[in-house]
Length: 561
Image (cartoon, rainbow, N blue to C red; front, side, top):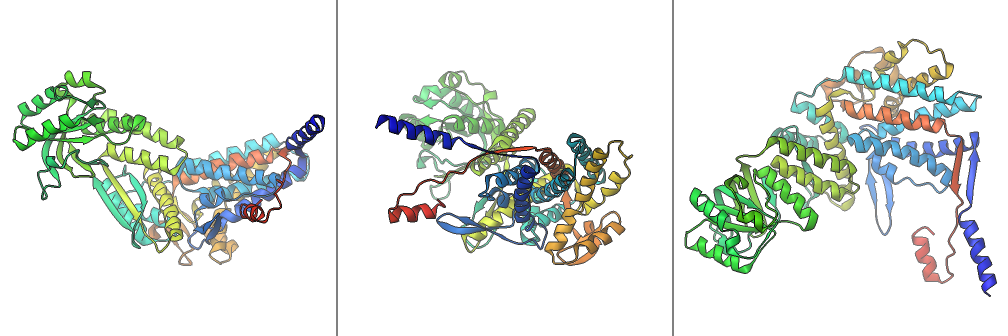
């Protein structure tokens, strides 16, 4: 028995780790098949007339979206060799999305066009693939430089709203909402997207800092029929210590008394005896004071309290020793404090260190680049809003979960596009900016290496694809659209929503320069790698054995086994 079981174990192990290896044209053909499927799925969403994509979700209703990165993340092919091509193309969209948050569909279309042409060249005979790759990369750099040279600075809220409208597939109401928020918050505005409890979308701009913790005792209340604390010109004590005895915070209380200013205490924990003593001082009018527990727990609490202290011009005191040696400089000063049973709102800090706040913001932005989940990004956005002292929340409404999810995808793209446009400028939209880069490539001196020149030509030909795809999705003749746009100059291009040729900037059809540059560089990088691939190694597909029990069969079928 042992020997037989041992043989079975060895045979199973060998089958589990067997590899499928494909070479040359066959390998590249399988990769290209996956690239085509991925690109066709994603490109359907491009432009104002782009189509919707329905995505199956296990056990719940399908998801509907026009967001390129969402579509790309859900493409998974059964053939592992083809799937490798699809996933390489998805890497293009992911890199572009991580870098600028927009332009993912454009990057996919460009990468597919370059990869298809590159593989076709290699199929025709012996080619120096490294020279081909260098030619593609050189041409992409020239295009990026040309895009930057034609870029124009965003100067008005109307231009901000134009960028948002394009990213929102023509939804003017939502783009106006973003424009209003930018007008109130400025260029560095921090946005959060949350689901609304009603059908309508709503924008709430919050000034100051709000903490999700209220007073530790309702007896601190002095306004609103005993349910709210309101103080002006308030001293702020921020500490991670557990305050067990009144004498630990006596120096801070004496400072507040001598300055005749209210004191807000935010601490990790405050004992019942200390709370009772503070309330008695409040009721006897000896001292205006309120105590609040610090938000969150552990390392997250430390991060949030450090952000709060920086934003309010205070020093975060780590323990009881710091409390006993407190100085006036350790206390922040806040113009207005409003505290109720569930939240604490701090308005307009009087003093804070701009350099330290800027360094902290840069640190949080670095963390956002490494964040994996949307929840992590939202928390980091909240922290950044706390440092800036203002925050805009868009509550996304809809008739059902599908509508809300699709709208959130578009809003997220629009917000990234707006921030990118403000920082890097804008260029004509509708694929026109890429067409205007063609003369820059044609003006380059011919390369002595044929493959190098072919690589340049591949990129030049691919520059037509975004405009071609937008026109095709709009149901018009794409070749005729490209011909007329190339005959024009500057901002002249095609408005696919209205079906007219016009000055695109005047019409508000613009793209963020950074998004187009990132899409080009990422597409050229991935496409040139695909063209230089010679071998594919994949795992052999192993179908799991499903028991014959009918209930188990049904469950297995439900999850695709």
